[in-house]
Length: 266
Image (cartoon, rainbow, N blue to C red; front, side, top):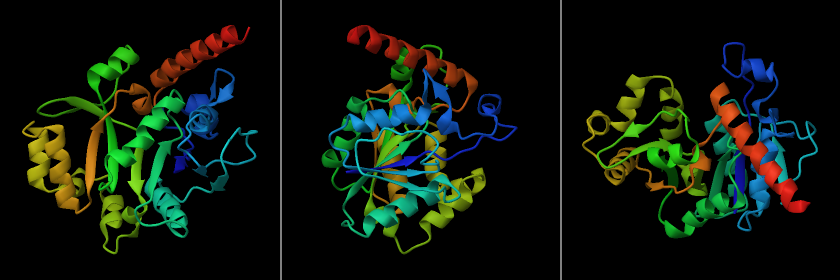
């Protein structure tokens, strides 16, 4: 299985992380002596299911990247969605429509090979799904990263936040309708998002009338895209870095991991 690594992003002056990046790519933020992206690549290196890596939005010469699999670098295509569609299109030139692809954000540096293997294995567990979206329960998130403040969706049976390591099949990028254009157009408009999902689905979620499974089924039917939401036991795949507080949490976590590794090697 190939992994698409979405590592674009240059925080601007109004971004909370700008004082830390000073205009440089977020993927190059130093965490325990290494760029944030390299920690993500380490996890992919440790996952036997990953056979190739395609990285979007980072200069291949910015760091001596350590990558165990065949790798391709691509410039940012203008948005995360366009990066994904471009990646699926290039993979689709040599793969079948049913081929699964792992989508990995470049700002989840606490993931490990074990996390990647679990996420990748869900392609076998859900063979009919176009998209497998991983979510993490609030209690799991806060037990692993005490004090973390995330945005959670409250459903009838669970309270979750979205993950940043997910699965998509090549065929999802080969649709002949305008779904992806509508998703791009709706990304900054709550009204357009409501129209896209349908007011019934939106109200059902807001009023906590749906369970996680029911919400996924309703959204899939509305979008005509076979999707499933899967609870992850690993909080790491939802621990993205988009605020200074998140940066400090993952920095401390990775410093502790690096110290443990040094002690074990001594």
